[in-house]
Length: 466
Figure 1 (cartoon, one colour):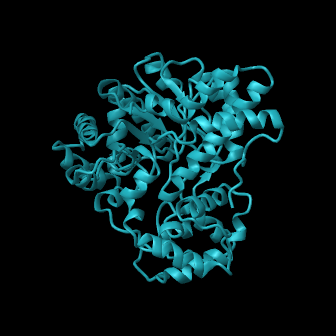
Figure 2 (cartoon, helix red, strand yellow):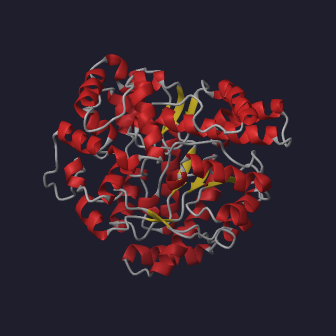
Figure 3 (cartoon, rainbow, N blue to C red):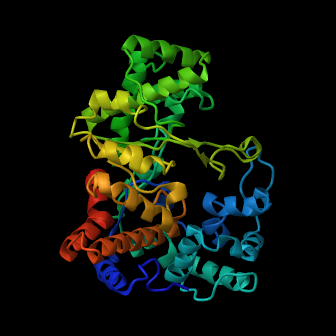
C-alpha cells in the first residue's frame, strides 16, 4: 500500500536529492514532545482491547469523518456522558469503519492508517468491506502477543521520549506507576492548566478549590492561586515535565496590574464574568505563566484559535473533544504584544506558538518569531498536520523565520500507532522541501543534510529541553 517515494518531488533531480536526505533521517529516534496518548497504557502495559478500540473509537480524526457522513458516534462506540449504552461490539464497529474507508481517500488519515496497517501489522491489502473481517482477526491476533503491548511498540517505534498532557488536578498516578515499574521508556507529563485558568471551563470554582487542596494552599485568594500554580508546576516537573500547554480560544495576552488581575479572579470565582473579562483573564494568565517559566524553566506552548466543542448537541451527548473543534481567524501581532513587551526579549524563555489560521504564517507569526528571542513557531498543527499543510508551512515561514526559529515536529496524537506514520510524513515533506532548495541553488546539499536532521530530531529536543 505504501509507495516508497510517496510525498517526494516529481522532478527527477529533486526526487533523487530527497531520497538521499530521507535516508539519513528515516531511522532517527522519535522525539514526541507534545501529545495526548494515555500514560495508563505505558503504566499497566496491558494489551489494547481490540482493533476498534485502537483505531476508531478514541480517534477524533477518524470518527469525525464518519460522523460527517451521518454515522452516529454511538454506532462507533464513542461513550455518552449520561452513561447510556453505545455500540460495544468491536467487530461491528470495525465493519462499519471498513465499509466507509473510501471516505478517507486523499486525507492525511489515510496515509497514517495505511502506514499503521502495513508497517505495524504487516497488512498489504487495502481495508474495505471485503477485507474487514480479515483485518479484524489479524490485528486482534497481533494484539494478543507480547510484542504488540504498549511498551514493546514504544521500543519498536524507536521512541526516545514521549510527553503526555495532564490537568493540574491530575494526581499523575500513572506516571508514578511508570517510575516504579523500572521500565526504561521515557514518558513525561506536561502541565495543561486550562481547567483552572479558563473561567468559562465547567465548574471553574470547584476546580480552583480542588487545585488549592492539591497544592496545600488557599487557591481562592489571588496570592494563593499563583502559589498553587508554582507548587503544581514543580510537582509536574518531578515527573519529567519540561513544558506547559495552553489551549485558549484566542491568542490574546494581557499584562495587568496585580490589583486588576486579582479583581478579575474574584469575579471569575463568583461566576460574574463577562466573555470579554474571561478572555482578558486568560490572556493575563499567559503572561503570568511566562513569568513562572522564567523561574522554573518550563517551555510555554500556546495552542489558540479553535472554537472548541462547536456542536452543542455532540457536546451535550458525548462531552468534550469529540471532533467538533473548528479553526477560527486569529490575530497574533496585537494579541501577543502585552506578553512580548513583558518577556519577549528574554532569550532564556521559550514560548512556542501554534496556529489554526494559516493566513497568519507569513503575515504575522514568521515575522514575530524572526525577531523576538523568546518566540518560536510550532509546526503545522491539527487540521494542517498533513502533507499539504506541512509544505505550506515551510514555504510561508522559512523566508522570514528560517528553520531555527521553528521547533521540529510534534505529532499531537491520541492514536498511538499513528506516531511513526506522522513523523514519517513530516520527515518526507521536509526532505522534499529541502531537496527543492538544493535543486534550485538556494542550499548546498551538505547543509540540507544537517537541516534535515535538525528538523527531524535535534530542534524538538532543544526547544522542549528534552
